[in-house]
Length: 352
Image (cartoon, rainbow, N blue to C red; front, side, top):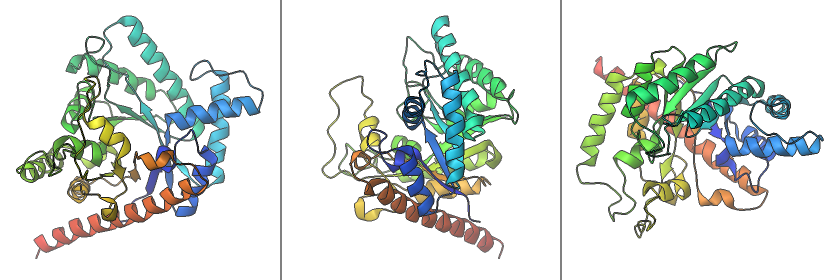
């Protein structure tokens, strides 16, 4: 099987230095099928479009200016022959304790839902909140209430918008795929599922950039194998709505822990040192193959998409989107081919 291949717009260059049209051109030339529309790229495009067309500044998502800009952006994607795989991320959405904060969060989410059909996507990524207590609660009941509201609102669109929930490795409450899956199961709506991200799971469960070995412990490979067996056993492939792929750089020397207690230790590594799959020459060392094989074994048949944050994305120059698009497509295509070959080969061998 050859899945559709995509890349997040953020992984083609920072929005401060690289326009969305330039990034779309690079992605299309490299061979990608689809793009994850990242929020900062959307904000930059929306505001630039409004200024260029003498529209009033957007004051909230879903207002007239944002809707006009979203329609124009949808046409831009079509002109490059690219689909919009999803809008991402809906940040810090769930679990607010204060009713006013909850209402504000839901109003923003509703505005994003209004934009999704116009840009051309029926999929919205909601990552677990990084806003901590006491402002938010990670209790199951609180998260389910908010995600069920979101799923039900999304279902009102024609066609219905699907919601995927992702455990963020440095979230305040729910970090593991199991934590996100617990909510998805309890919400119990057909249009809500999981987003799996190789980096978020492996950074949390396997890697340690502050350790000279790069691993959390000598037993981590066995623990990961059990974790992946649990994924295959518990999650049906059709409830995985999206698969994001990224590797991580082995840090030599190890990183120094942040002195600011408000900074989750994983975040500095995550934001500056992700790599595209199979970039061993740049220090890629995570067992992405193990994670990918488990995703395939669930029966997942959706897109594979790159979500890579790296300091190189902030470089200036017209070559940046092109260079990252070419690197990313090469690694992702090979990683997907190899994973399906391993899983299909093992399945065939087991029948002998």
